[in-house]
Image (tube, rainbow, N blue to C red; front, side, top):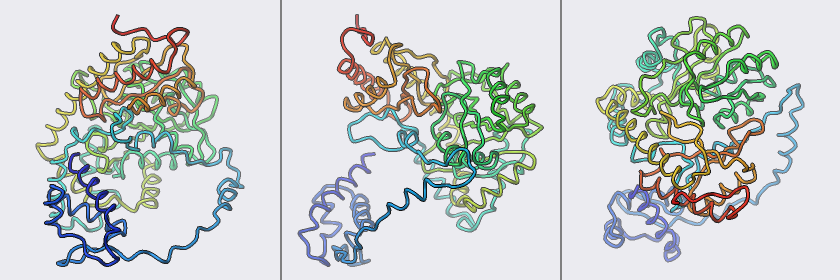
Length: 493
């Protein structure tokens, strides 16, 4: 993190000084910049590369860096207002127009301003990512024969076999497709299983990225409530009957955002209900490797015991490694696999072979098991720190469920709080120096209460968690009146 900050600071300083040089003028040598700014040669090289990418400087091997010639061919802006009509006028028979609203996803992808604690993040903090193991795996992968050639469209056989073993003994490499991460796999599955305008049953609340993918495909999400034991089978059956849907998307393990695990008695029921409705279950198993070390034995995926091919399985290694290791898997049995494969080929051709080779190197190394154990222990510790801090600092807020996996907590505002209060709390928290995710984007219909999601995986550690919750307390004290329905009692009485 320090190296990245130094690169940005040096690039900014050099950018500010460019006007001192005429176009074509030579910048100081790398050695001079190292001595002047007291940074490493790597930092200088990366800062110059950044300015070159911005078109501000040009580099000449053996000669140095020079200020670029200013552009004189910038065209005046055109008139793109016609696109509003074109994009909204589908003119077809679709019941639900296709819309692309990525706001719920961007909340977890956009880095907050400097100094803001990232309780809204969707990935592991860099201190939890296996950066050294990834670098070593990528270096070894790059030296493999044919590593930069074209891979099989379904993915490397060895990698598909590894995913199959992870899912369960009843699957083989032939049932698996390698995908560019979990989001891509979800989008492919939704396009393959339901035509535009069709309903798709989803857990409520659920992952905003899935809702965005469904709507972008022209599907109509229909909510099915979850409780502490996962989706409620009787409501799932009723939703199938009422809508005629042929797809249900669920996260049976450490559901996002509630953290719930589908109860053993409900697992077979969910698959049976879908089978009787002639429908598919899309199982998004995103958090299996984000288990906490006090969770106990995990249930197998629904796909592990599914001879009839009801379940289409989605998983990814991105969440437990690093954002740019976008390697995941789709598993399915029967004719649907060929449809999934065809869409995958049309959309992406294939996942880059170096990433697949690096993934094989990573999961086959001793570092892999060590990394999983380390993440498991650290996530449990962070969850405990955040839970204790919330109960101390925000006792009027409630935690309906303390998860044993995943990287976040689902926090409910005081009972009288409204959706307007939720939005105001999110804004007040940001002003206090904490970025949090509002609960509204996790619902495809009206939410039953005001809620927020707080990530403990995306921050630096226990100290930052404690400070972040303290800032949330300060935000509440400024936002809510000292009396009335939103009064927050002191956690230090």
